[in-house]
Length: 294
Image (tube, rainbow, N blue to C red; front, side, top):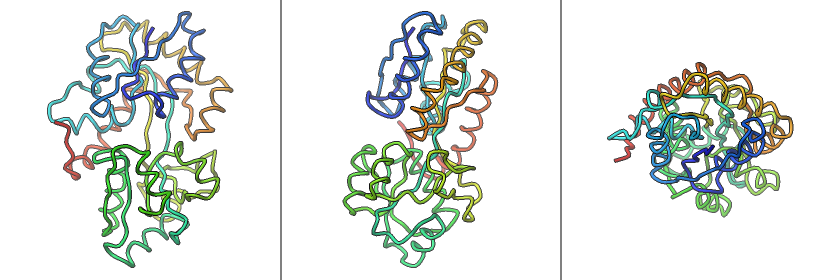
Protein backbone atom coordinates (compact mmCIF):
# COMPACT_ATOMS: atom_id res chain seq x y z
CA UNK A 1 0.00 0.00 0.00
CA UNK A 2 1.17 3.54 -0.67
CA UNK A 3 0.21 6.70 1.16
CA UNK A 4 0.69 9.85 -0.87
CA UNK A 5 1.86 12.91 1.04
CA UNK A 6 1.05 15.91 -1.19
CA UNK A 7 4.00 17.92 0.11
CA UNK A 8 7.77 17.67 0.08
CA UNK A 9 9.65 15.36 2.41
CA UNK A 10 10.72 16.70 5.77
CA UNK A 11 7.66 18.78 6.64
CA UNK A 12 5.19 18.24 9.45
CA UNK A 13 2.72 16.30 7.27
CA UNK A 14 5.46 14.04 5.95
CA UNK A 15 6.79 13.39 9.44
CA UNK A 16 3.36 12.50 10.79
CA UNK A 17 2.61 10.24 7.83
CA UNK A 18 5.86 8.32 8.27
CA UNK A 19 5.30 7.85 12.00
CA UNK A 20 1.78 6.64 11.25
CA UNK A 21 2.94 4.26 8.53
CA UNK A 22 5.68 2.76 10.72
CA UNK A 23 3.14 1.71 13.33
CA UNK A 24 0.26 0.87 10.98
CA UNK A 25 2.22 -1.62 8.86
CA UNK A 26 1.53 -4.54 11.19
CA UNK A 27 -2.18 -3.75 11.26
CA UNK A 28 -2.40 -3.64 7.48
CA UNK A 29 -0.44 -6.84 7.16
CA UNK A 30 1.63 -5.38 4.33
CA UNK A 31 4.33 -2.74 3.89
CA UNK A 32 3.24 0.88 3.62
CA UNK A 33 5.26 3.14 1.34
CA UNK A 34 5.17 6.90 1.74
CA UNK A 35 5.37 8.76 -1.56
CA UNK A 36 5.89 12.52 -1.61
CA UNK A 37 4.06 14.23 -4.45
CA UNK A 38 4.54 17.89 -3.60
CA UNK A 39 3.58 20.83 -5.77
CA UNK A 40 0.93 23.52 -6.25
CA UNK A 41 0.04 23.72 -2.57
CA UNK A 42 -0.80 20.05 -2.32
CA UNK A 43 -2.94 19.95 -5.45
CA UNK A 44 -0.72 17.63 -7.50
CA UNK A 45 -0.60 14.83 -4.97
CA UNK A 46 -4.24 15.20 -4.01
CA UNK A 47 -5.47 15.05 -7.61
CA UNK A 48 -3.24 12.04 -8.28
CA UNK A 49 -4.99 10.08 -5.54
CA UNK A 50 -8.40 11.31 -6.68
CA UNK A 51 -7.69 9.72 -10.09
CA UNK A 52 -6.18 6.50 -8.70
CA UNK A 53 -7.91 3.14 -8.82
CA UNK A 54 -10.22 2.74 -5.79
CA UNK A 55 -8.73 -0.61 -4.83
CA UNK A 56 -7.50 0.30 -1.36
CA UNK A 57 -3.82 0.32 -2.33
CA UNK A 58 -3.48 4.11 -2.72
CA UNK A 59 -4.38 6.59 0.01
CA UNK A 60 -3.88 10.29 0.64
CA UNK A 61 -2.61 11.99 3.79
CA UNK A 62 -4.55 15.22 3.34
CA UNK A 63 -4.48 18.46 5.33
CA UNK A 64 -6.43 21.65 6.00
CA UNK A 65 -4.74 23.13 2.93
CA UNK A 66 -5.68 20.34 0.53
CA UNK A 67 -9.16 19.69 1.91
CA UNK A 68 -10.13 22.91 3.68
CA UNK A 69 -8.68 25.84 1.76
CA UNK A 70 -7.85 24.63 -1.75
CA UNK A 71 -11.44 23.67 -2.67
CA UNK A 72 -12.41 27.36 -2.58
CA UNK A 73 -9.09 28.77 -3.77
CA UNK A 74 -8.76 26.69 -6.97
CA UNK A 75 -10.06 28.66 -9.97
CA UNK A 76 -10.33 25.43 -11.97
CA UNK A 77 -10.73 22.70 -9.35
CA UNK A 78 -8.43 19.75 -9.96
CA UNK A 79 -10.46 17.65 -7.53
CA UNK A 80 -13.54 17.80 -5.34
CA UNK A 81 -12.58 17.39 -1.69
CA UNK A 82 -15.84 15.59 -0.90
CA UNK A 83 -17.02 13.74 -4.01
CA UNK A 84 -13.61 12.54 -5.22
CA UNK A 85 -12.64 10.74 -1.99
CA UNK A 86 -13.78 8.10 0.42
CA UNK A 87 -12.58 9.71 3.63
CA UNK A 88 -11.39 7.06 6.06
CA UNK A 89 -10.55 8.99 9.23
CA UNK A 90 -9.29 12.20 10.72
CA UNK A 91 -6.08 11.07 12.42
CA UNK A 92 -4.72 14.25 13.99
CA UNK A 93 -5.23 17.95 14.55
CA UNK A 94 -2.84 20.81 15.33
CA UNK A 95 -3.87 24.35 16.27
CA UNK A 96 -2.27 27.45 14.88
CA UNK A 97 -0.41 29.62 17.37
CA UNK A 98 0.58 33.26 17.50
CA UNK A 99 4.25 33.89 18.25
CA UNK A 100 6.25 37.06 18.76
CA UNK A 101 9.88 38.10 18.89
CA UNK A 102 10.99 38.52 22.54
CA UNK A 103 11.24 42.29 22.04
CA UNK A 104 7.46 42.54 21.57
CA UNK A 105 5.80 43.51 24.89
CA UNK A 106 2.80 41.20 24.63
CA UNK A 107 2.10 38.01 26.55
CA UNK A 108 -1.28 37.04 25.14
CA UNK A 109 -3.48 37.76 22.14
CA UNK A 110 -5.37 40.59 23.87
CA UNK A 111 -2.15 42.41 24.69
CA UNK A 112 -0.90 41.92 21.14
CA UNK A 113 -4.06 43.33 19.59
CA UNK A 114 -4.00 46.35 21.89
CA UNK A 115 -0.32 46.90 21.08
CA UNK A 116 -1.01 46.88 17.33
CA UNK A 117 -3.86 49.35 17.84
CA UNK A 118 -1.58 51.83 19.59
CA UNK A 119 0.64 52.13 16.50
CA UNK A 120 -1.45 51.69 13.33
CA UNK A 121 0.64 50.59 10.36
CA UNK A 122 3.78 50.05 12.44
CA UNK A 123 3.64 46.31 12.97
CA UNK A 124 3.90 43.46 10.49
CA UNK A 125 3.34 39.74 10.62
CA UNK A 126 4.96 36.88 8.73
CA UNK A 127 3.35 33.81 7.19
CA UNK A 128 4.42 30.99 4.91
CA UNK A 129 2.71 32.66 1.96
CA UNK A 130 -0.40 34.21 0.43
CA UNK A 131 -3.45 32.00 0.76
CA UNK A 132 -1.97 29.78 3.45
CA UNK A 133 -4.09 28.92 6.47
CA UNK A 134 -1.79 31.09 8.58
CA UNK A 135 -2.45 34.16 6.46
CA UNK A 136 -6.17 33.49 6.33
CA UNK A 137 -6.37 33.09 10.10
CA UNK A 138 -4.57 36.38 10.70
CA UNK A 139 -6.77 38.07 8.12
CA UNK A 140 -9.73 36.98 10.23
CA UNK A 141 -8.15 38.71 13.22
CA UNK A 142 -7.43 41.84 11.15
CA UNK A 143 -11.01 42.01 9.92
CA UNK A 144 -12.75 41.30 13.20
CA UNK A 145 -10.51 43.64 15.21
CA UNK A 146 -10.03 46.28 12.50
CA UNK A 147 -6.24 46.15 12.75
CA UNK A 148 -3.85 48.15 10.59
CA UNK A 149 -0.99 45.67 10.24
CA UNK A 150 1.11 44.58 7.24
CA UNK A 151 1.26 41.03 5.95
CA UNK A 152 4.72 39.87 4.85
CA UNK A 153 4.41 36.70 2.78
CA UNK A 154 7.35 34.32 2.49
CA UNK A 155 7.90 31.30 0.30
CA UNK A 156 7.54 28.79 3.07
CA UNK A 157 7.54 28.73 6.84
CA UNK A 158 11.28 28.41 7.43
CA UNK A 159 12.43 31.72 5.84
CA UNK A 160 9.59 33.48 7.68
CA UNK A 161 10.71 31.97 10.96
CA UNK A 162 14.31 33.01 10.36
CA UNK A 163 13.30 36.65 10.00
CA UNK A 164 11.14 36.52 13.12
CA UNK A 165 14.03 35.02 15.08
CA UNK A 166 16.27 37.82 13.77
CA UNK A 167 13.74 40.44 14.87
CA UNK A 168 13.11 41.66 11.33
CA UNK A 169 9.42 40.76 11.60
CA UNK A 170 7.80 40.89 15.06
CA UNK A 171 4.78 38.60 14.68
CA UNK A 172 4.28 35.12 13.26
CA UNK A 173 1.53 32.54 12.79
CA UNK A 174 2.40 28.85 12.58
CA UNK A 175 1.65 25.49 14.14
CA UNK A 176 3.52 24.56 17.29
CA UNK A 177 5.93 22.14 15.59
CA UNK A 178 8.56 24.46 14.06
CA UNK A 179 8.44 26.81 17.07
CA UNK A 180 8.73 24.49 20.06
CA UNK A 181 12.51 24.50 20.48
CA UNK A 182 12.74 28.26 19.90
CA UNK A 183 9.96 28.89 22.42
CA UNK A 184 11.69 26.77 25.04
CA UNK A 185 14.99 28.59 24.57
CA UNK A 186 13.37 32.03 24.61
CA UNK A 187 14.28 32.98 21.07
CA UNK A 188 10.60 33.33 20.27
CA UNK A 189 7.53 33.54 22.50
CA UNK A 190 4.26 31.75 21.75
CA UNK A 191 1.52 33.94 23.19
CA UNK A 192 -1.72 32.35 21.99
CA UNK A 193 -3.21 29.05 20.91
CA UNK A 194 -5.99 29.40 18.33
CA UNK A 195 -8.03 26.53 19.70
CA UNK A 196 -11.09 25.92 21.84
CA UNK A 197 -8.87 24.56 24.61
CA UNK A 198 -5.29 24.89 25.73
CA UNK A 199 -2.56 22.63 24.42
CA UNK A 200 -1.82 19.59 26.56
CA UNK A 201 1.85 20.09 25.66
CA UNK A 202 1.90 23.79 26.69
CA UNK A 203 -1.00 24.27 29.11
CA UNK A 204 0.36 27.59 30.35
CA UNK A 205 -0.34 29.33 27.01
CA UNK A 206 -3.77 30.97 26.89
CA UNK A 207 -6.17 30.45 24.00
CA UNK A 208 -7.52 33.36 22.01
CA UNK A 209 -11.01 32.75 23.33
CA UNK A 210 -9.83 32.99 26.94
CA UNK A 211 -8.79 36.61 26.44
CA UNK A 212 -11.91 37.71 24.61
CA UNK A 213 -11.75 36.49 21.01
CA UNK A 214 -14.62 34.06 20.41
CA UNK A 215 -14.22 32.15 17.17
CA UNK A 216 -10.42 32.26 17.28
CA UNK A 217 -10.16 28.59 16.39
CA UNK A 218 -7.89 27.82 13.46
CA UNK A 219 -5.60 24.91 12.78
CA UNK A 220 -4.67 22.13 10.49
CA UNK A 221 -5.73 18.51 10.42
CA UNK A 222 -4.72 15.30 8.73
CA UNK A 223 -7.24 13.11 6.98
CA UNK A 224 -6.58 9.65 5.57
CA UNK A 225 -8.55 9.21 2.36
CA UNK A 226 -9.03 6.70 -0.46
CA UNK A 227 -10.24 7.49 -3.97
CA UNK A 228 -14.02 7.69 -4.32
CA UNK A 229 -15.57 4.35 -5.15
CA UNK A 230 -13.45 2.33 -2.73
CA UNK A 231 -15.55 -0.55 -1.39
CA UNK A 232 -17.15 0.11 2.00
CA UNK A 233 -15.50 -3.01 3.40
CA UNK A 234 -12.04 -1.66 2.56
CA UNK A 235 -12.87 1.80 3.93
CA UNK A 236 -14.17 0.39 7.20
CA UNK A 237 -11.26 -2.02 7.58
CA UNK A 238 -8.77 0.78 6.97
CA UNK A 239 -10.62 2.95 9.50
CA UNK A 240 -10.35 0.28 12.18
CA UNK A 241 -6.64 -0.12 11.55
CA UNK A 242 -6.07 3.65 11.49
CA UNK A 243 -7.88 4.18 14.78
CA UNK A 244 -6.06 1.27 16.41
CA UNK A 245 -2.80 2.82 15.24
CA UNK A 246 -3.71 6.21 16.67
CA UNK A 247 -4.31 4.58 20.07
CA UNK A 248 -0.68 3.44 20.18
CA UNK A 249 0.76 5.15 23.26
CA UNK A 250 4.25 5.54 21.82
CA UNK A 251 2.85 7.21 18.71
CA UNK A 252 0.69 9.48 20.82
CA UNK A 253 3.70 10.57 22.84
CA UNK A 254 5.66 11.27 19.66
CA UNK A 255 2.84 13.34 18.19
CA UNK A 256 2.11 15.29 21.36
CA UNK A 257 5.79 16.19 21.60
CA UNK A 258 5.13 18.01 18.31
CA UNK A 259 1.84 19.44 19.69
CA UNK A 260 -0.21 17.27 17.33
CA UNK A 261 -3.32 15.91 19.01
CA UNK A 262 -4.07 12.30 17.99
CA UNK A 263 -7.65 11.50 17.01
CA UNK A 264 -8.82 8.04 18.08
CA UNK A 265 -12.57 8.06 17.49
CA UNK A 266 -13.03 9.17 13.88
CA UNK A 267 -15.35 7.27 11.52
CA UNK A 268 -15.66 7.56 7.73
CA UNK A 269 -18.91 9.46 8.24
CA UNK A 270 -17.51 11.89 10.81
CA UNK A 271 -14.37 12.39 8.71
CA UNK A 272 -16.43 13.44 5.69
CA UNK A 273 -18.51 15.77 7.87
CA UNK A 274 -15.34 17.28 9.35
CA UNK A 275 -13.90 18.00 5.90
CA UNK A 276 -17.17 19.58 4.79
CA UNK A 277 -17.25 21.81 7.87
CA UNK A 278 -13.64 22.91 7.27
CA UNK A 279 -14.43 23.89 3.68
CA UNK A 280 -17.35 25.99 4.90
CA UNK A 281 -15.22 27.62 7.62
CA UNK A 282 -12.37 28.63 5.33
CA UNK A 283 -14.43 29.60 2.26
CA UNK A 284 -15.43 33.15 3.34
CA UNK A 285 -11.87 33.90 4.47
CA UNK A 286 -10.47 32.70 1.13
CA UNK A 287 -12.96 34.83 -0.80
CA UNK A 288 -12.28 37.89 1.34
CA UNK A 289 -8.53 37.52 0.84
CA UNK A 290 -8.86 37.35 -2.94
CA UNK A 291 -6.26 34.56 -3.03
CA UNK A 292 -6.59 32.17 -5.95
CA UNK A 293 -4.79 29.17 -7.38
CA UNK A 294 -4.88 29.38 -11.17
